[in-house]
Length: 400
Image (tube, rainbow, N blue to C red):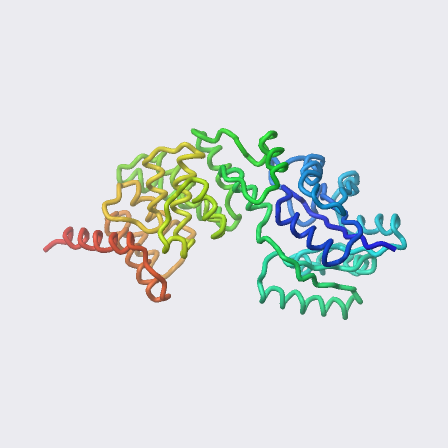
């Protein structure tokens, strides 16, 4: 009898997090074989448009896991038509290996959703469940252990929790960074395949795109929940530009790109800064929420080829600064009060911006500074300088 791990996934693309997990599983579970099973059509999510074919993802897996002797490619789900249900895969594997121990490998998120899978009770009878860390989050792991205990009682499932090392990264983040010109967490052979084939917009010519295509590409790089905000900012910016004499097309492009790197975490933001040789203060390194404006501006210039006016508007849309251009003020305030925003006082701000742009900017900066101070957070020096500048400007414009 041998021990066989079944490690499925979309692998779109396979990254170093997958590879480290595979090596850890072989060691921790003492596996004789580890089957790498790319899904043809995952039942729980839709693959992004333009993804490599199942066969191409299989080829990437071959390159990614080449350094693990126990790892073997399994094209079972790719050859089977329809959605790639785990219960069907395990049924076939159990027929092929009737006397061997099968371990179904899953991450924390997969165990927590296990009850929603097709025929989970049957899956629990076909294989042992081996749950691994995807990120070192103590509270999440406690929740996983509680759920594992519950499944053991309810389904008589045989569940092992694996105390593995891990790299906190996802294929979604890897795809975004490839499009942004900063490959991340990929085996060299896999990165070479991606570059050669131009997958995930890697190496694509994205400069000077017509607006409709720019909008399409940029929205794909956002989390779905943020897309309405980005669209709202772009549409609001156009209206304000028409009122206050800025270039509506520049406002539209800055609006749709202003949060282009917002979906990236701290480590990925720092990776972008290193890629583009950006100098950072210690405060910026410690406060990653400030970084997306800087990295977004660089991406707008280097990847999308936007004008300096657009780049600068993106750069200052979070902190503001003294003496902003009209376009910079428009993007700052459009981001703050677009129609999807909801907070006390936003309606008054929306009324004010059509009458006095500088006064609206001042109110936006003042509210932000007050909110950060109430939360006990550091306020960026640019914001403090902008607050004093626009307060003075607003006071001088008031009738005596």
